[in-house]
Image (cartoon, rainbow, N blue to C red; front, side, top):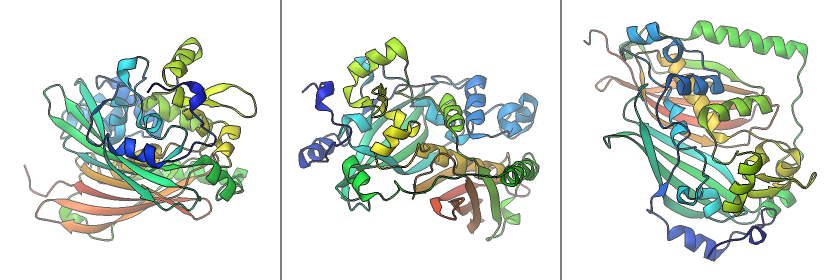
Length: 387
């Protein structure tokens, strides 16, 4: 049945048995995933790298890339977000999973598991399709009812070759319960001094110097306990988030007349700012304080996939140009609010000499010492003497 705007209660939307049953009926049904970037281009790669603050010359410098084992420009691993975060401006583009299922319920990223088969190369076309693979009831520390939905996106070349797969877990909550429980609503927001700013700037300088780059990191020379990082991200700002969206795209950020048409086509995307009365899309909860507070959060917050991308940056800086990030599994444990800083660090857990691989575990920690995300990864490293 077609929805109307009045039928979508974004402030008090409930999670119901009927809604969950409708979700489960769609498990395995592929849905369209419009692209922000259809082709892997130099511009697209550089826009993504800008969006996560990654100055690795492997993404930026043609001569450097040609001299690498890849013999040309490739994309950072999580750049592929840009191939399934395009605008949904026509009925045939479909709805996003968050608005299709349980419209009005708050959706927060709980984790992602990426599996890459190979890098994306500049000049190729990559498309994607997605389908729900799992729906489960879960207890909620916010109160109220909570559901976890797992959606698998598969990215393929024009020949049908699978380039990568990602399983995304989104936790759905009832906004009224999150407001009433006040789990995060009263958390103080960050503020910094001139000394803090100088400390952050010095850290960023150290990171560029520590990047492995063209020096191979051989698996034989990489013991368990080897340290990754630290790497700094932030403080998180509105500008920081916009920069990330410019790199990966966003299905729900049209403007003006196209925004009005978008909200008519996708009524479950519509929010009304309680402070201004302005109609906006779901993405506004990341930026607008009044909308964030209506969801039980004290301020705007990051896109969880930014932290996934930051972990991939930590790993690619460490592994060097000859390494290959094969798997990355990230669990989001706490929101990352505007003003927060994120420190990323990890270590090598295991080494698989037979297959030339290492396993890494890492954490993201904010300025309060709280772990906001964890990650594990499998990385293929070059071997000494290999051709």
